[in-house]
Length: 123
Ligand SMILES: [Zn+2]
Image (cartoon, rainbow, N blue to C red; front, top):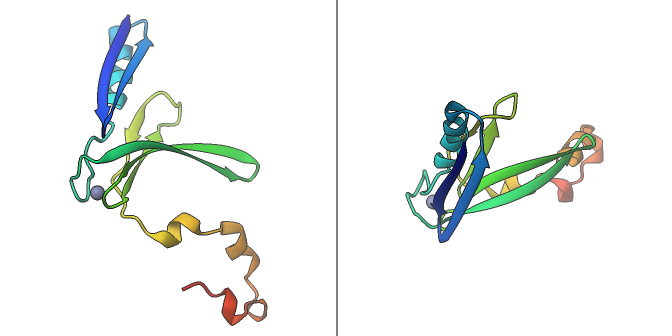
């Protein structure tokens, strides 16, 4: 069963086409795509866009798909269930500069108080 689905996110219209053997599977896939947020969950702006981010952790590369609000910069991240078949969208999270640029390796390395100078404390 071939399914075509059009979805407008911000100013971009995406056309998804996928093939599933069973109608139930097709609807299962379609449901995750239909659920992509079209408006910001915080400020309700429709000025949102689909973005992708890559992160490396312990030698593995993780890919993140997000919908970001261009007005308040809040983001909703796509989640996957364990078998990777079904996707869902998390609640919009408000933009905080410290979360975006925090280096986890750096915070783990500075456990010893004597190694931290006043200049290293982020405000
Ligand atoms: Zn917003």
